[in-house]
Image (cartoon, rainbow, N blue to C red; front, side, top):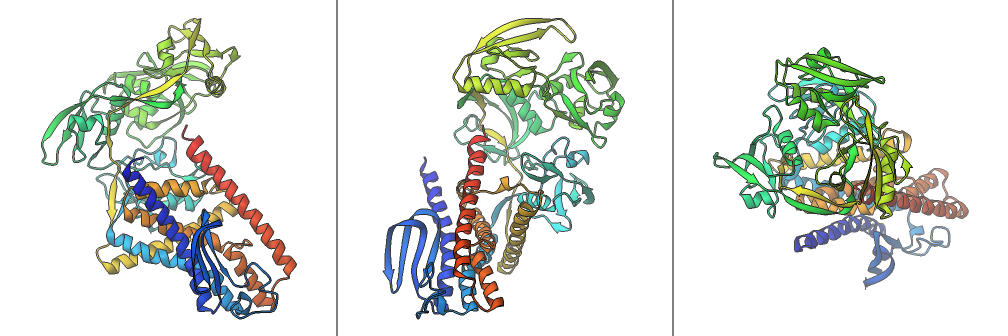
Amino acid sequence: MSLADLFNVLQVVLGIGLVIFVHEAGHFMAARWCGARVEVFSLGFGPRLFGWRRGDTLFQIAAVPLGGYVKVAGEYSDGLRGTPEPGTLATLSVPQRFLYFSGGVIMNVIFALVALPLVMLAGLPALQPLIGAPTPGMPAWEAGLPAGTVILEVNDTKIVDFEHLVTAVALNGSDDARLLVARPNMTPESITLTPSFDENLGFYRLGLPAGLSPDQRLVVDPLGSAAAAGVTGEDRLLAVVGQPEALRVDEQLRRAFSERSAVNLEVEGPDGAIREVRVEPRMDTLEFKRIGIGALSSNVDATRSTGPAASLVKALGIEAGDRIVSVAGGPVWGQGSIRDQLLTVKTGEPLALTVRRRGELLTLAATATVAPVLLLGDLALAVVENTSRVIVSEGSPAESAGVLAGDQVISVNGQATDSWPVMLESIQREVAAGRSLQLEVWRDAGVGAPMSELTINLDAAPVTIPNYGVQLGAARTILKAEGFGEAIADGFGATKRFLVDVWLQLKKMLFSDEISTRNLGGIISISVISFDTASQGLPKLFFFLAILSINLAILNLLPIPILDGGHLLFLLIEGIKGSPVSERTFGYSQVVGMVMIMSLMVYVTYQDIVRWFIEPR
């Protein structure tokens, strides 16, 4: 771990500790203001690591850093029901106890009200609400929104950054979303889209990915190959030499990187000088092993009539459900090979596709009235799950052993495979067990040709990937208030928005299926996100801490026994009926509350483990 990483870890520990301290300080000050005697002020739970006593109060740091607590005399005992003693919780009136139990929540909100204006005054790094190429098949794609479109409003609410955009759409749920958008070089227009629920992410979305830098600025690893070749973060990428001009510059870069060889970049420096730089990749070996095969992705899930090649889609007669088998006479297996074959045909030339439709092979032909490669943008391609045909990664063990793209794997170590999910599960199981693989493969020489059967033996090996040390930067910006007055207004407005957003997220998680509880995060998520924000500077870290503080405030207001909200609920009942709930009821409620909180902690920890340690693989 580098010195910078250690410094970021220290910032995270102090930052999260500050949020906990602020919450407990709220209880402490409320108790003292109401005349109660505070016996313990603790950051953390469990055994005391160290502490000191000042007056009646023991201030301590405890071993389990998952929160903190303030103990007032008479609390956690019969203080509310026995003979009241001066300075105990039982001597306080209902309004005073209400203030004591809500003090932490109040201070959490005050922390956000103080921190967010200061963050806006300093300048907050953020992503512009500018989108990349919409996800094929999703509502934004069907509407024909191009990469570079700026989302100005969602349901009449001004969108300030990309994270705000994602949240606004998710909280909108299944209702139609009214968007004010500005396509590249066009005046703003209003469109209405119906969100689609994403089973993997667990919320509604429109398929709007974060966009790339409009001026095509580069992000350069200072220790990588591109930096060694003379590329800097001040350079703009104009083109990738040798790549088709019909492709966007980000598509050119991806296509060049997929070839795993040197790339020539045409860049413009900050002085306006244009130069060509040759970048040799550095081959990096990752920890996990693979054999290097993948699923076919040539199923047409959807077509759209709003894109630049819509007329060509219609002329060819491509339908959802078609599986593209060949393009311009060449076999294809997925987006990369389809794109490469489309690039062999020029505008005005005849274009022929072979597709499998309802079990039959059909040839579709038309004159390419637009650049044929644009056709790919108007097709939503999906994995072909009902086949065990595969594609092969360059430089992989499968390629070295002789597996070819289009081969059909009929068995893995004697276990029959008739679909991609079954085959993938078999391979993963055998590789995890450390066993060599024996693949029975059917291979044909061309579309419709007789198949030959082969036996191929291979072993999984660590993944080797080319690392060029350069990529196109995201569409970043700095949200900065012009003066102190504007900073206060922006900060207060952000605090109000986050309070409402957090409440709506919890409401939709608990009382609807519009946001999955899988989106809850625990200490692992908090730590990971905190570390990432700390690496982006103090304004970003304090922005996150303000949001964390608001989350803590809303969570503590939930009417769950043992939480502040549970105590507030009992006080409301006491205020209405004129006496506290029975000791039996109160005692049982605390046990129930403890079980609920512990269950929640186990659940969010499990989700964290899946999110950060299982899903990335």
